[in-house]
Image (cartoon, rainbow, N blue to C red; front, side):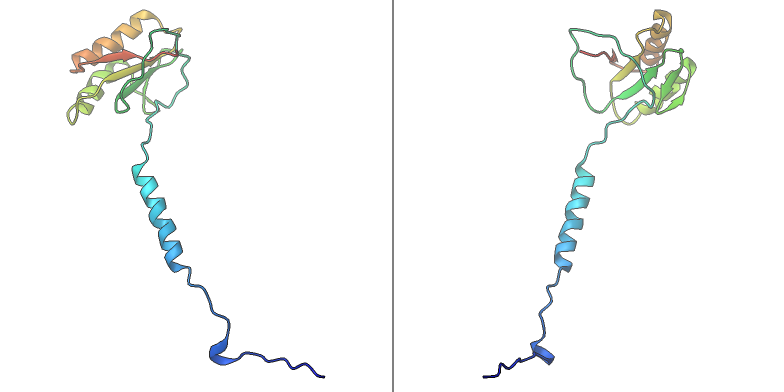
Length: 134
């Protein structure tokens, strides 16, 4: 007895699965997660913060100013100096009231820290905080 093989041709070929809707759904989910993600703003420099037992978490939306061990005052990865704090804080507070958080290295002289706090207050900041590690 001979076995016969039947080959499908024409419209009886293999059916293809349409993955376009799947790709569309993946892109929609990707866009959703990108839009809803909260990006944390960093100062752009590494600072060794002092320890504090009374440290608490503050608002996500704030003005972060760093003071490095060398005494450089930095915002957004670029040096602004003590004289640049007041115009920067004044400009950022025009749109929305936010607290100012100063990330000072533990070896920074108190004089420099007080100058940055004063400049922030003179620019109109309601709340000036110092960032610490718990």
